[in-house]
Image (tube, rainbow over all chains, first blue to last red; front, top):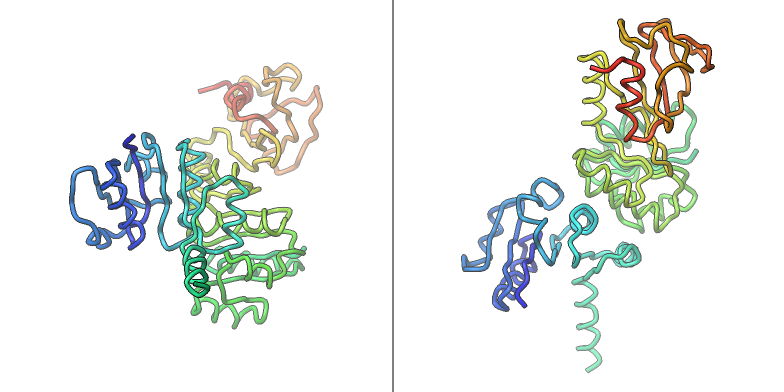
Length: 134
Length: 221
């Protein structure tokens, strides 16, 4: 079933995830503090791009956080992702929240606090090890 | 006490000075190289030029034996993560965050930050007091309790003036702590104590009974 998804951070990763979700049929809003970063995306139905700050409750509300099914925080900064994701989860009650956390110790801590985290550096490490062993 | 201060901007700088002057052991962590350099000139080797949200940095700064961590940067996200790492990874007893966006205060508290200081709220509450001469001023949230230490000034003309404290309709959940007279002298709470105009009443009260307390002491409006 198509979901309503809000993504924070339109870097390379955020843009790729947004495109993949829209292709899958989901309805995606992506926000970034820098409009420049939206150059990575083509305008298409099912995708809205809004200049907004993921660490501001007011901006999150403006981006529709109160009516999304899934919230994904993918900026390059762990701190921004952690604040945005925890606000989505606790202040706005979004049921599914995914958060990018690069630092392994912080990642373990946030998993322990109930956040679903992903770590690009961890994924890359696993892939590199796998390639080396093959 | 051993205190870790994160961020050596205006707040962090003056806080570090004050903490050192009152005999505390302090380490201050500043990520910006230029700011760290000027902090080193003033404070010497207690300055660490690094990122205070990094667990490895906090570990090297001795977070394990730290009593209080205070994160004072201008970024709420940084202050939240520094406090959470301090609390959950290093078990620091008291973690304090400066909060720029007052919207974040309840969230920070839910997430384990012991004290979330919103500079905006502080200024507003002082302004309200100065401008209206009234209102309930929040002095201190009590950790682990759903009550706050508040202050209410008894205005001239309040029906509470001259009454014995026991005769006032203060709400059941509110505990009066002390009365400070216009001369600045504290008076101990007793049933027979009579309020005077200009008295400041400090009380501990749950938020939902603030209005009732305020009406009892000021006569409302």
